[in-house]
Length: 302
Image (cartoon, rainbow, N blue to C red):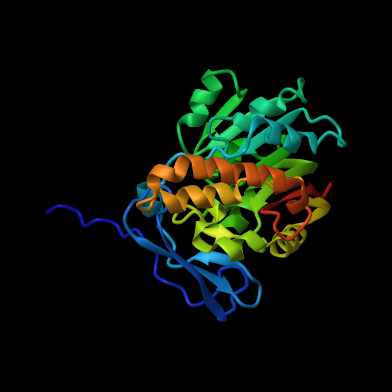
């Protein structure tokens, strides 16, 4: 007999995966706007801690079904600026980029840290191709939380970076614990995440690009992440919402919307106009609640 297909969704839960509260509300319902695969997905939000999460959550099989290349919205300039945030600290001997994909971030960071060895870990073979192309010194295929991967990386790194990686993970707390395990005592964890408390999330709803259903499983408010890092023994060094902002909220929303209507022929010019508005407004918006992301640098206890 043929094997029964594995479910693509976990059971729907009635409590918050972050704090356990049962005070939930539906934040949004959305189809797959970017890749247009079938299905409607629900994002719930906890009324107590504001954690937003896909409910029901995709299983690993479901993630494989709906997965695809991640958005390349971060320009080389933004990636270099992110790496530059580590310049005030001692130059690292070794740096691990988690969810590195094609290793665009290590490639950008090498211009600033010429004597640092950059390694990458990713669940896709792209990490191996990045190693073959000379972008990485070592490539590790698999999840950082996998015991065989983490055992090889334990205590090896001065810096571990996770840039827009946690929203794609099923268990973000475990990912943070694994990242800290890979760090040496006194090492630094560099994180960038979309900010679900951004005013753009409210204004644009399902058209806000970081909602990105069904690929984003968790959207973690800054306050929750900081408390979790402290509970895992970290000292928070810096938190920055301004520098992490990337100006493409309006242009992405216009593109997603028009390409699903009879006005799709106008999507190109309208998106270009919205992109201009994004960039003109960015210097002001990044200093307000419209900032769409945040950056955290935390130090592991020595």
